[in-house]
Image (cartoon, rainbow, N blue to C red; front, side, top):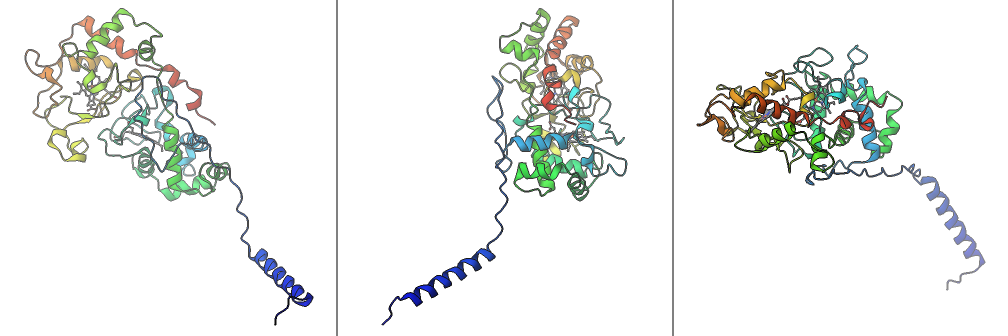
Length: 368
Ligand code: HEC
Ligand code: HEC
């Protein structure tokens, strides 16, 4: 019969002790505690749509936005600084130009000609997933990855980019704070930059303040607004927004009657294959339009006066012109047929879309 005597109880204790010790030796090292990143709260400006886009696999965090902010401005990002070719997003997307470059035809700092003129970074949080003039890029994250390899942009490789960023002592701890470990990957770089780009929000132009009842428009600006937002006027609002659509774009693609023959290699048709998209490009936002010439995807118009003259009397008939360009039809024919005063008024209104709070916002400026 088994009796639990002193000998047994000592042996029992020893066994427990051995077990405890051995398990203590085998125990994995306690993982170093990294505080979870702090959720970043986006403030949606008054009157702006609530259907903004943040991909579920890239939630915005304070640490992620901060990391993205530095990468966006770090010329070493291209992975080619050693070769004397530093380049980063801000080399082309310049804050004082609404994160466009505002100079000639999309010339990057390395002298490469980009195929099209630039697009600004403004309120891309609301882009439904059609980035680029023809909407071929589904997300900002994808745009970063394309920028890295594009022969007219970084002309680099993800490997070069990752190893350049990894080698800079300030970054691995920032990756750890943003993503939990200090591992630097192309995917994380793209995510962080996209988080920062989503904070590039413009909502303080004179027109915004007018809509909020904080400021009045001049008589000329008001007349321009009426022309912009009426079908009998210049009829711009169907494609470019306006009252009720402060993004100043529908983010849709139209053929706006510039030509009769079209390059179907880079238009919206090249993405969708729909004949209704032949010669169609994104109706870009008109926010900060003063700062982002030359105009149209191919930069054919140098000034806003050129653009207004085009919509007034320069429309070119083709069967692909969007039906909204109805001023191709009688009693018009070549456009809205504005008189000089109306042209001046329309231009005055377009200039109310400039947001200098945005172009001077220190939270979006070079952090270095
Ligand atoms: C060499 C100049 C250049 C550099 C550098 C550059 N871009 Fe661009 N970016 C462009 C041009 C040109 C376009 C218009 C592309 C098109 O659709 O043809 C563009 C378009 C975009 C768009 C689409 C905007 C829209 O409204 O659809 C995004 C997003 C973007 N760039 C992000 C970035 C990011 C992020 C970086 C840095 C990783 C970057 N770009 C670096 C030239 C540049
Ligand atoms: C049928 C839709 C449509 C209408 C109506 C329309 N636009 Fe456009 N607009 C576009 C498209 C599409 C583009 C870009 C076309 C391209 O690049 O080839 C554009 C481009 C522009 C640009 C240049 C944007 C840039 O970033 O280069 C300006 C400025 C502009 N439009 C102003 C106006 C004004 C002012 C009116 C009214 C007189 C107007 N638009 C009416 C569709 C339209």
